[in-house]
Length: 173
Image (cartoon, rainbow, N blue to C red):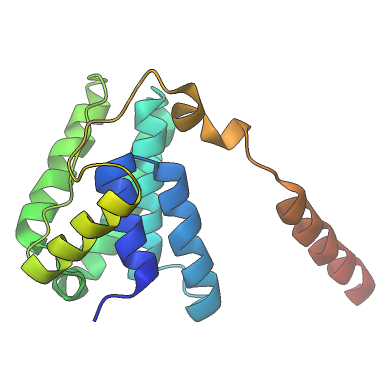
């Protein structure tokens, strides 16, 4: 019913609070399944995690801009949200509240997506235990690796992909 990438995404979002990992997990799935569909609901989930990552780092401008994009997708795909085990009306309200909180530049506080499917909740809680975290844990703001993870990642593969793309474009001309 729910694939492992989505369950892992939710476990990291609600447990480890590793929003960067959330992004990586769903981006990989999105690129595999829907690479040209930039308005796919998976993109909304990716952008949501990215906005939380920026918010936690006090990058309010980046957080707001990214959350706006996610909110647009979630609004357009509102009927699909329920298929992901989420209480859609509650989630939409929480997104609006989060947006206002960010605009007011209030300090970061961990946020949970309102899941509505008990089976999904149990799967996510089980995965949290496997990741040595607890569902609903607060983000550890003292963990610099977690808060600034993008600065520590190996970008070799991304740089190589961009170089190959540029070479293809150059040959096409």
